[in-house]
Image (cartoon, helix red, strand yellow):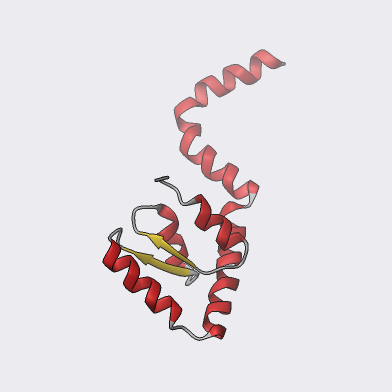
Length: 105
């Protein structure tokens, strides 16, 4: 089991609503964007959430899919991804980063 939800991210980028476990960060993002459903990582809860999605009207699923595509585009656009990466990793290696840049000049 992966800890991110790459298949769900790909589905969102393709304009599909997603059903994601509450154990991956993508679930919170999808739910906040109304682009899918986050369910507890238990078979009964996941099945219940899947049944709920299957009962939604086609128009609701299409709208959810459009929001999923928009969420994926904003979250995973390369500049946004690079910014998130640097926000997380930058403080850990800021001194080293300066040293590496200086040695290349």
